[in-house]
Image (cartoon, rainbow over all chains, first blue to last red):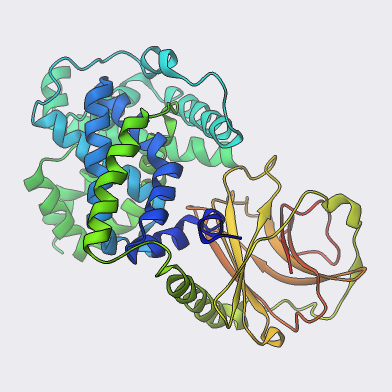
Length: 191
Length: 246
């Protein structure tokens, strides 16, 4: 096998070791594996393909330039990558770079850009997305609402408290309760 | 940590995980959590829920311009740093192998299976469709695992076999489903017509797991993993979900 083919078979954490060595082919594979999820998350948050592309590019460049900071013990590569994209998107939202962002549901935005033919991995990830979304939607409405406003809307707890006209402590409490219930729901799904 | 400080911060766990604190609040919370094991434990308990949120988004394909533009910059920076692909790959793979093997050796005593030596037959016909890919760094070999994609979509893994195959091997997996408390993953060594039970192991909430495959691998043709009842089994109860061809 050629070296590039060999890299294809490695697990994410091993690919990341090559990235940390400065190997651009390994980095390309990292993007191939997680670029779609990264772009999808950014797009879900900002509702604009151009801005989502900018955020994804900034995030991956940040990953490349700070590649030595990845620590396997702190979580999977995928979680690390998506965490960086999430922070970048929040920064963009809070810097008010996205004035006309959409607040429609994810389904309404995404369906128009779904690929016609799916690979096995894409189909599995779509199924996983459905499962998690179902768990999220099964939460009490007030908890689901604050989680979505915070995580996908990029709003701070104090902004959410103003928006929903409720004490900040109540907002924080609902966030925590919502995550607690979501964790339990997902445990059931996995089991 | 004082009770007052803890009470101020404990309500912020959810907001922190969701990215809903301001920079000042976030730094204050992180400072508190470094010293407060109660908040740290709560963070780790709720983190899987927050980590699942980005995966709830229906995947959409990014525009091709994203990758081309990104790789143009990365290639340029790699050239400047003298880090061309290929020239370092072998060395890097070697370091991966060594690290995994060393980690595995440290776990070996804990993972040893009490039924070492017992052997049973397995229907070889059920294993069609699996194959392994081999990397070699001159000493140890890294073999890619193949998974039953119907049951473990998106999982990956590798087996690191040291130069002296009598020393066993180390199996590392990623993206495997966490199992309920009454189940475990079990490793098997297939040699000829026999399937020999090996270590039991589990995976973390992140789906990552590591285990030693102890004993002499000489003459063995595959390492398998099945899902079994807690405590393991004397013979595989079903089709392997993972296979590494040796």
